[in-house]
Structures are given as C-alpha cells and as structure tokens.
Amino acid sequence: MRVVIAAVGRLKQGPERELAASYRKRAEATGRAFGLRAIEVIEIRESRAQDVERRRVEESIAIANIIPDGAVVIVLDGSGENLDSAALAGLLREWRVEDRAAVCFIVGGADGLAPSLLARAKLKLAFGKATWPHQLVRIMLLEQIYRAATMPSGHPYHRT
Image (cartoon, rainbow, N blue to C red):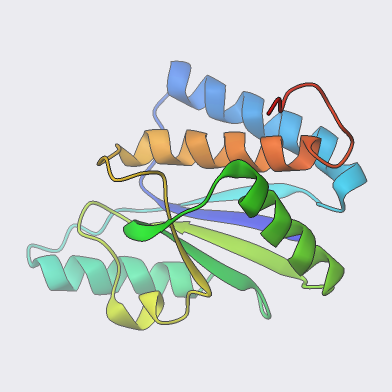
C-alpha cells in the first residue's frame, strides 16, 4: 500500500527536516514487511491569496489534485478523533488487507481546508486537543507510521 502525506508548506532545512527524514526512512525500511511501499511526502505551496477562504480553496484544490485514485483519505484536524498508536496501526493493517492502493494523509495550511476536501476524508485524525505547528504534526505523523510498521513484528520500538 502506498502512503502519501500531502502537506501545505515546506519544512525548512534544520533539525525538523532531519527528524522527518529519519522517521520516513525508518518507516519505509520497516514498513516493507508490513506491506507499505514508499512513503511520499508532497509539499504543497502555501497560497498567497489575501482572502482566507480563497487561500483555503486554492490549497485544497492543489491537494485534491495529488490524491491517488482509490486512496483512503485521512485529514489531520484538531477536531478529529484521538486514536492511540495501536488503533492507527490497526486501521492501516485493515486497509492493507482490503488491498487499498493508497492511504493519503493530509496536513492542511494555517487556514484549514475547504469543506469539499474535508468531506472526502474517511477519517479526521487529531493528535490531542492541543494546537500543534504543522511542521511538528508532519513529524508526529511520520513517527506514528513508523510505530505502526514496527508493531506487527514485535519490534521493541513500541512498548505497551
């Protein structure tokens, strides 16, 4: 199963980019045995529109254009469900068993996403009630994908 992370904005050079790259590399290596193919991170350029709604729509259109056909769409949203790591791993496993071609995680911009894109989501996922910088959300998501990939093999990374 292909994993795509569509994120508005770019990670600048520095420790955040390095940490994201590290988790991505680890998830790809471990994920092969779990049935995950390459993990693609696609950075969407932030809209420069003056109007908030226009920015939301422009960014959402750009994201919608890169969602793979037949992908399970998951939106990272502060009002989403708080799943523990095992539950997220279970969903990924379920979608892989269903032979889904891809799963697409979406990290929107500062102004959020257009309602039409939110409506496409099979799941709205939150990392708690706190507000997180989008750069950290991307890193946390990559870490959770890595953690999910380690669980089936009993890898010591995930300890309960």
